[in-house]
Each structure stands twice: as C-alpha cells, then as structure tokens.
Image 1 (tube, rainbow over the protein chains, first blue to last red):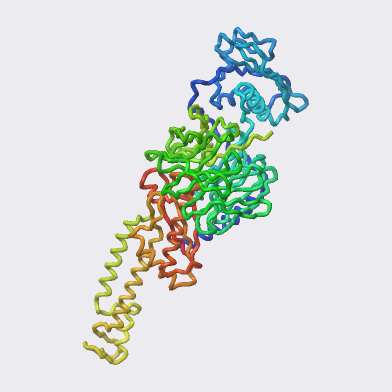
Image 2 (cartoon, one colour):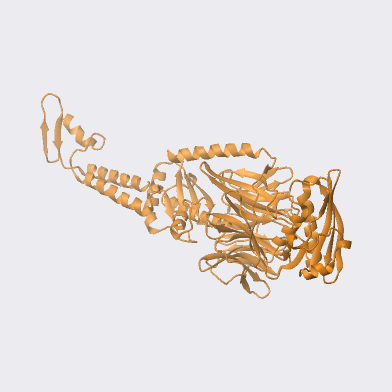
Length: 438
Length: 197
C-alpha cells in the first residue's frame, strides 16, 4: 500500500509540475549572498572612486560600488575602500597622481553617471598611476533598470585594459538550488549574474534537475530533469521559456555538452546497454555513438579544438579522465594521480584539464597540464563537485559542502583567492558559467 | 525509522524460527492453516494412517490426531518456505560498497525470493531504483546507480522474473535515504530499492 501511495504521489506531483512549467515567465529567484573567503596576496591595488551622480539614480547599489565589488571578487584586484581616499575626483583633470602614489595605488578609475530621460549614461576614465597615463576613456549607457549591466560592462573594460584578458563580469551563472521542505524537495534551475544578483528561476520541480550546460551563444540551457520520473535531456530557450525534450531513451539520458557551433550535443545514453557517449544532431535528432566499452563512459566535454572530447571512464577500474582526439580515435588516459578523477572541463587554450580528484578520502578540484602531465590540486575543501571555468579561463566555480548544505565557490584558475555564493535558501549546486556574449 | 539489513535479518530469523516451530508439530493448527486436520471430524474417521479418531456426541465435532501424510508434510514445508520467502520479501533495499555494483552474498537469497514471487505473479511489476552516496561526481554517480540497478535487474531475471516485469531508474546521489556525511550515512545511501507496482 505504501508503495502505491508513493506512486500516486509521484504521478500527482508530475501533473502539478507540468502545469507549473507551463508558466514560462521566469520567477524572481533566490539571490546568492556573496562571502569573500580569501584574498590574494598578489592582488593589484586599484581605486574605484565613487562616481559623481546627476539626476535620479536607481534604488539599487551604486554603479561604482558594483564595479568595486566585481574587481574585488575576481581576486586579482584589491580595491581601496573609498573612506581611505584623499580626494574623490570624477574626471581626469582632477586626478592628482601624487595622492594615489602615496596610497600605493597602481590604477585609478573615475567617472560620472547621469540620468538622461530614463537612460543611465556613464562616462569613465582609467588611469595608470605610475605612468600617469590614461588607459581607457569611454562612455556607456543602459536603461535605468539595467544599472547592474552597465556596471558589469565597465568592470569588463577595466579588467581587459589592465590584464589583457576579456572580463567575465557581464556573464551569467546557471545553477540548481535544492530546498528540502517538509512536503518534499524543491529543485530550482536558476540563472543569475556572476555576483549572484538578479537571480531568476527558470524551472522548478520536485524531482532532480542536473547538469545545466550553456549553448555557445548563451541563449539556451541544456540540462537533465527527472520530471517524468526518469532522467531526460531538455533544451530550454531562456528568452521565450520554450523547452524541448531532446533525449528520452530508455535508461540514462544525461551529461549534455554543447558543440562549438551549438548544433549538436554530446550526451551519455545507456539505451544500448550501458553508459556510452553519443553525439546528437539537434536539428535531425540523429545520433552517433562515440565510445564503445562495457565500463561507464560519461561526463563528456569538448576539447579546445572542438573536434575531440574529454570524458570520464572507469575502464581501468576506477573513474579516470580520458581524451579522445576525434570520433574514431582511441581514447587516451590523462589522469593517473589517484584512484578517482572525474568530470573533466577544459579551458579555451587547451593547456589544462580541470576535474574532481579524490585523495585520502577528500574530493577536491585539480588540474593537469596537458603538455607536461603535471597535476595540481587547486582546492582545500573536501567535498568538491562540478568545476566550471569562466569563459576567459581566469576563474573557476565549483560546488562544495558547507555545514549541512552546499555552496558555490569561485577561485582563480591557478587556485588561491576565493569567494563563496551560498544560496539564501537551501543548497546550491551544479554551477555552469556562461560564455561571453558580445 | 527504517530497519537496517542486520535488524531485518534478525527479525527474519526470529520469524522463521516461529514458523519452523509451528510446522514441526503434528497438531491441528486452525481452519485455514490445517485444512486436512479439520476435515477429519466430518469424514467419519477414514484415516488410513495410524492414529485414532474420537467421535464426540451430538454436535458432530471431534478431535482427531494423526501424523502428517507425506503430502501434508510437503504442503507444510512449502507453506513454510512461502512464509519464509514472504518474510524475506519484506526486505526491499540492498546495499553496495563504494564505487561497486556487486550484489552482496547476504542479499542473494532475498533477491531470489523476489524473483520467485515475480515469476509466480506475472502481473506484478517492479521498479528498480539505483542510488549512490554523495561522494564523487553527480553524473558518474548517475551511471553507477544505473549499474547497481542493472545488476539487481539481471539477478532477478536470471532467477525467474521476466524482464518485462522490471523497470530500472537511477537517481545517482540525488535521493539519499539518510542525510549526513559519515560512513554510516553513505553506506545506507549506496543502495538499490525495489518498488513493487
């Protein structure tokens, strides 16, 4: 009887879920709260001088304050608190380099924001203090409601001018939150800014949601949802809320990974007996099987060439990372350092592969230099999962345990500086960093 | 709330002991348990085996005492076996070691009981849910949970269940039976659950 009750409960919940999912308008999500856990010793001193303001400003955080937070969160900058500044210039002609040298600053950002008929306009200048030289002088504008987008855009420009690498502050995070209520668990697929703000719920279910993956153009998410009682892969267009169930074969349908052109997905299916990796052409639905082994083959991700892919296989006994250079090439084992290495992700340069690594009972994030084979453990937490690189390859986000729940932690791709994004309610897991969309 | 395997096994042994005690006596045990015995009172003592028949006066009821026939003994044994299997079928969760899908020796008899039950009841279906503990990666654990569910499915089919009666699904590490990050919690989460439908 009990089992039957469970079954009915499940069917009912599926019905309720289907109804809910028809409401395509994204709901306001749980904002992630940022907790800076560690600063980098080598962080560059920069002063983001509070921008002068004219006209009505948005009720939210000030633009210059958001920029300051962005740069701080990157771990590569050490912004000076405004109360320690000797002057508060808002344009280049008022910048006295001697003052900023005295404060040990290497860069100064000054600017003004004004409200012109509902549009926020910003004018900003970045100076190199030692060279007394202007690196950036630019304007940008955005609707009043998009002040955060405006700020992240300026952060990107500042970051690129100083490091030579595109900033990733305008990108977004997809992740899954889990709230355990008395009535049962609630899984929510959410998308937020990389600072955890402006979170929106894209899917809510009382069955698990897993493995969100961004399309290369940043307009769609592929993910695994158990909403029908078994895992299936869905492609979800964010703007319209339209969803398509693209893989619902018998057995596993999991671990979707987009091709560079956005036309196909790598995925793990077990319809032919056990977990194997396939490529699906999304337009035709055609499948090509890419692995063939009695062991578990899963967690595929394209390499930087877009031709080959990394994946997890336990063909040697325990899970290890393998690379297959083309559809038909023989897989080559990459990791040897411990008994458990899984879920690879690679950077756009193809220098490193990042993965979950077990050593002495702890699960951490590690990376292997693909040229030398050297392995470095990047994290000191003990239950780490789901590493995802920022699109500029400079930062890495992963899920880790914290108390009874799990949080997202961002570190530099070399290890070091970190901040955490705990969910304001429940657990947060399975982060996926969006591409840079120009 | 849930009994562990060892608790269930202890309960099972206790229950089987009771059954064994009952079935070893030759006395009448009650209408539904011992039809052969209750017949005796009304069939005017046509006992071909040794023993005695005592007729009561008036009300037609009597008490008879006899050793069991071979057939009766076989029936009793079959009943005991069915009871034993039924008791074993109370166990529907099976546990696994870390990163393995090997069915443990102590689970085999119980799974055989489930397989026989499915064989005897072709209309009965079972959903086989595979789970992993929280350690390691979600997608690998999804495949590991499936491997565990498949191992149990194969075992049931080899022992008499029809493949069409079974359905497998893996939840990986998504639906732990107990919360916590101790070895005892993990051990309870590395499991396959049978859900009869």
